[in-house]
Length: 178
Image (cartoon, rainbow, N blue to C red; front, top):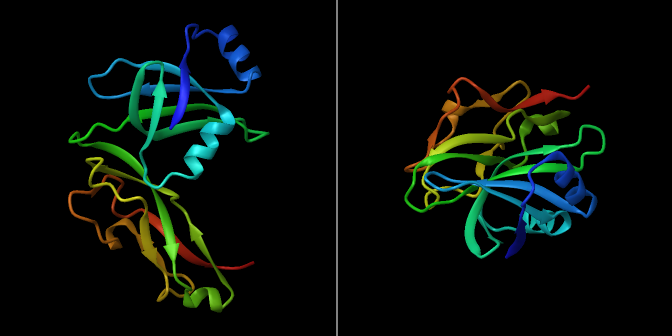
């Protein structure tokens, strides 16, 4: 379980001091809940997020324990270092929006013909309960050739999970290598 601290000071000076000490600034929020300004050790946060089995993972801030989902994050434009993360509390039974990662599986025909698999939308926005949420949206690319694309309307939606992006948006395609 990832453990963090509650930030007393939410000003610029306090934030800079925490970052200097190796902390990652976070906001935790949820429907009907009070926002929590928190900070986590950056290395522990990255290790936890990389090794999680589901989209939600447990955190403990102060005396509160909860399951959270990463909604957005901000990184430094040059160094790529994480600066800030927004975490939403995964409340059972509440239908809300989540960002689910896209995974391409299989060996495409177009890749054998000197093409590349281009994933244009790394994460898709879905509306569902946390219990119905898949870990990833898996797309089979084995029968795709050069110039083929998969749109959101071509994806098989699972039960109780609704895509909220426009159905004409391309998720992945097979492009010609330059």
